[in-house]
Image 1 (cartoon, each protein chain N blue to C red):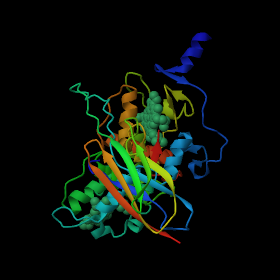
Image 2 (cartoon, chains in turn orange, blue):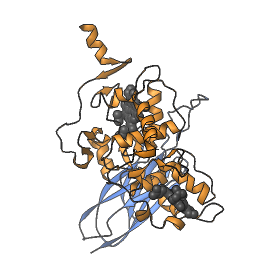
Image 3 (cartoon, each protein chain N blue to C red):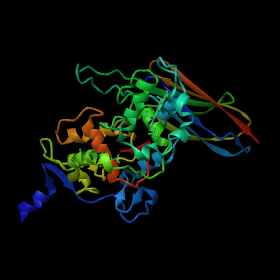
Amino acid sequence: MRKLYIASLLIGGMALGSTASQAEDKDWGAYKVGDKLSGYTYATKETRAIQDDDFENPAQIWVDQAEGNWSSVEGEAGKSCESCHNAASDSMKGVATRYPVLNKNKAAMVNVEQQINFCRTSQMKAKAWKWESAELLGMTAFVKLQSRGMPVNVKIDGPVTPYYEKGKAFYYERRGQLDMACKHCHEDNPGKYARANLLSQGQSNGFPTYRLKWQKIGSLHRRFRGCNKNIRAQPFAYGAPEYVNLELYLNSRGQGLPVETPSVRN
Amino acid sequence: MAKVKARVKSPKSVKKGEVFQVKTLISHKMESGRRKNKKTGENIPRMIINSFACNYNGKEVFASDWHPAVSANPYMAFHVRAVDSGTLDFMWKDDSGKEYKKSAKIAVT
């Protein structure tokens, strides 16, 4: 009996404590859709207050900068994002709810970061922005912000299904020295503590997010790399097909939650 | 973020005698001086904003000294009483002696 008890607390060598600080019966409004809970509902009151106020949310620094970049001409084609897309508030509305999507030659999924860089290299004849650069994070957040409050609504049928299946398989696959899958933390144990962290459902609707621990804005793939490293698994490269498929699966898992970019998390 | 950017939010117009809120946020890494470069083991020199002040028509109405425990991209909100129409001038100063400035107009009715 005693052994069994310990085994249930130790999943793959990671101690999981119980008791949630999160009030289950609180009315979370748009942040709760059926049994899907945004990471917002697991954040502390203080952190939520920062997200609630666009002025106080430090991610807006990056968004402001991106708003300027939207209309600045770069590259050999002599174009800015605005030259082709006009006002972002119209042309980018709803984009974040649909991505990742199948790329033009239907050979891979592309996320918003990759689409932005595709426009830079193919349409503007400008250099791609580096992953986790202030420019790419800011522009991704700026594009996604135009869908804020709209429900995530990714397509997973037809030719997209195989990519969705790959993403889903990744989610349930054990990996790393701790031999754990995403599921073990975010599906089986939300509301419990892993070391000092309150586990959430690991939803993707708020990215890029301003993380207090990072003291800056970061991408969903940075989060994936962190979660992989925590269980001592080899992380994949930013933008790797494995991560884009996983992103598709996560978005579909959180289908209906509102786009919350740029969120603020502990 | 290489370029330091300051943001300020204050009402455009307020009634005389009214107390209004001013919000400020500045992008700055606030390097505490207590971190080590992981590769070389050397200390990363301290580089923080060490003071912030707000002048209202040339008169100081708010001032504070900041310390290494302040997080990156510091946010500061405070209250000011409306006296006359004019300008609010904000100034942040960091360890290198650099000053970052921003101002906002206010109409007092």
